[in-house]
Length: 106
Image 1 (cartoon, rainbow, N blue to C red):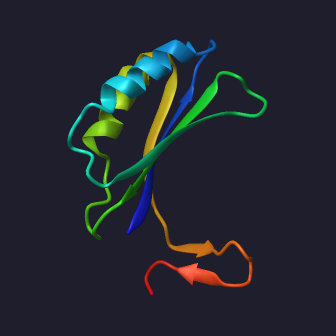
Image 2: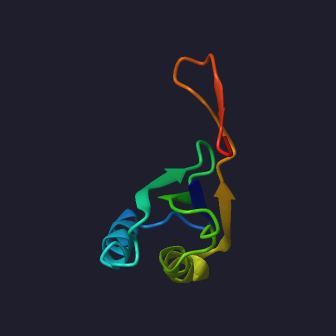
Image 3: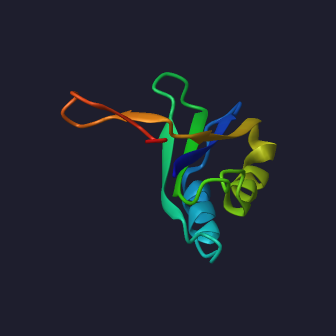
């Protein structure tokens, strides 16, 4: 089952990219990530101080919850501004040709 953990940060000031790089390197050393697919970081297109970290997972049903990795990242970022940490489970996807909607529960 595919799911994503999203950590969104609204900071009053710009986030140091070196800090983020170091944080990701440090958290990636954990060995509790066997279902980790990838981590992507996004910045808002207009608000430069808004940051969103997407942690993509693929695991068995029933294991979709905030992970130690996500909690560690949230804890490291919480003092930098307003933080939201949520988990989203994929329910459907449109294939690359745009002709068929695929549902996760099929």
